[in-house]
Image 1 (cartoon, rainbow, N blue to C red):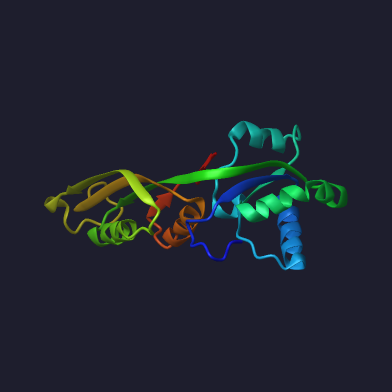
Image 2: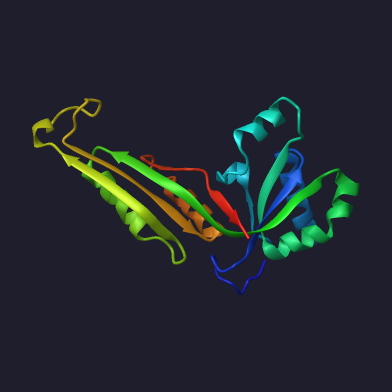
Length: 198
């Protein structure tokens, strides 16, 4: 990992291993610890990164293809792994099937709240994005009905209702970190992260 570069300035690759995710995770952890190498590693199955369609998943379930594990690694570590590809396969049986540079990442955010304070918390979080991330296509629909004041939370009519959505784009490491940070807002839903390759 390049320690001189700030988060968001580093290049990342998506590396796909043919093998079970738990096995790949244990292998990579052991390899990195054993080599003393510092690396930035994100696992698609842990961090909500979209990596395949329903057809691929179904083929895996019915046994028409082996399982795989998508990993996002800093570019230096990905290049190092590529050079070890044959040795990794010979020693472990794991195969690296893809090693491609990631250009950017994006995720869709949506919320539906019935209290102004929740909407303000979400808007503050979205307004204070780290440098390098952009919120585009943001749309919001607010409805205020003073006649519904005092009606319980599960009623069909509410005094205040706000629906919003937008798309966050930027470097993959920043998008993943944002998704983790936004998990503290249960009313804000983030889609799987989509990757754009070079």
